[in-house]
Image (cartoon, helix red, strand yellow):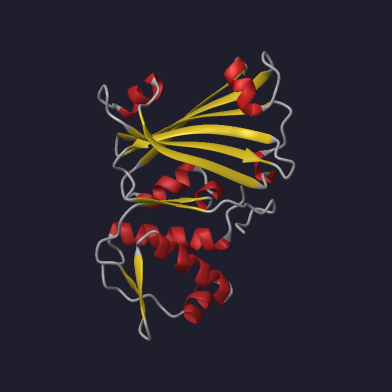
Length: 227
């Protein structure tokens, strides 16, 4: 999906905060100054700051301004991160080199997969496996499935997510190097159009302790702006 300006701006400041370029206690410029610097309205800047606040990267002090937090945590934000490629998302979260690899294939839908996608069993679907590592450490793996005749996922009107601590599938456990019996943070996603047709489903696994918290909004604007 196209990346909104407020997501891009928040990502820039997230990288500066996590790299130490903006140390704890640093005061951000005023909304008007930031707007002039980035060539956007104060409304866009306000949304970017709200995103940084939700991620725990900054704190707001009444009548004083916005300051870099003393202990920035790592929060997974949805659907804002859906506007970004995995490369951008993880680079915003890390000061270490990030590598993302993908395998794409056309497969035949099993009964279970066909039911989840609302298609006939035996139909062809696109299967994408995405693996991400940070400084050589595996941090994410996902399986995404999309019917061949489905509209592009950027036209999605809704994103549904189910988040749970769960035992990973064998392939996910192998990539994340998860010891036998250990849980991971599992995120199951469904992208739907306005008629509730499933455009894509994904199952994403992260190390259980990667994120301090998860931030979620349900509705998506088909123009690519969170509502």
